[in-house]
Length: 97
Figure 1 (cartoon, one colour):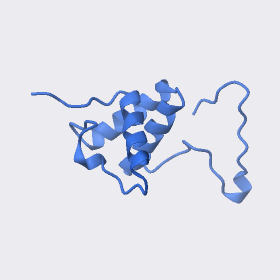
Figure 2 (tube, one colour; figure 1 turned 180 degrees about the vertical axis):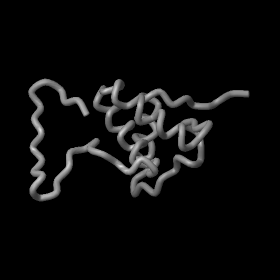
Figure 3 (cartoon, one colour; figure 1 turned 60 degrees about the horizontal axis):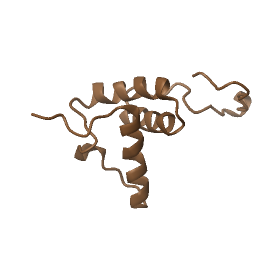
Figure 4 (cartoon, helix red, strand yellow; figure 1 turned 90 degrees about the horizontal axis):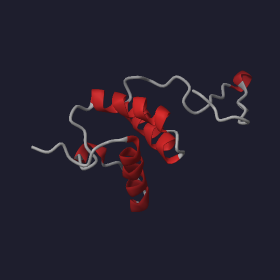
């Protein structure tokens, strides 16, 4: 993953620490969704779009209103923020007819 100028990797590989975005399980669609949301909220749309594309590949015809995106967040505002991030990454509201 690209880092903005001046941001250094502070992880310690000797302790098994990994930076966000290090290799994720490609079969775990939520990892891609969370990466897309985090990158979109950080203004890193060039990183958000490929992660979102993988979500859509694994969950065809995915839209913001798709019930498959309901997650067990403790606070409803977190679900709202999650969906807002997917919108920012480019996920459409509906597929239309």
